[in-house]
Length: 219
Image (cartoon, rainbow, N blue to C red; front, side, top):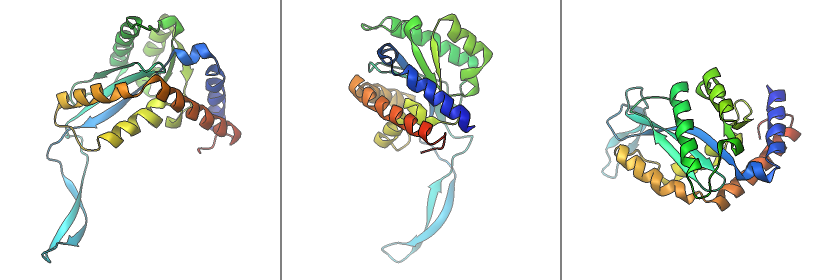
């Protein structure tokens, strides 16, 4: 609904005009990471080798049997980050998400530059585990202010539009194992400094302005 998209972009833009909101902003989302294993391939054509033989061109086909792990990632505008990796092939649900929020609260509270729950401003998408009654109740119980992301709008989430694409640009291939993924996230997430996050946020706010001016159309 374009009207909802415009209204929520307006609300987010207005909230982010506050320095307090920006400095306490936390963005959360999930992403699947795949591991190297033998998976079926689709034949998409053929090519002639140097020796003159014809060989098929294949591309990997994702399957539900493929080994994969979901990572829940939280980033702050202060350059802080926290993540958890779920068990193999396990996806997010309300119980796991609420547990993540509780662990995130402890993590942020104990930083040198802490973000307390009552000051936190949270951006998350509208996946069912994020907006279930239990999750919303847990968020409200901690006095966390939720900035409601427009529906079907990954362009209004810094993980989707900034963090995850850059992680994929660094590591396009599959991971060897869980430890390999952990080492990768430990190495790459600290590179999203406060300065870089601030620049990404300015770009997102500019795009929300365009969405509002375009009546909710995608840009």
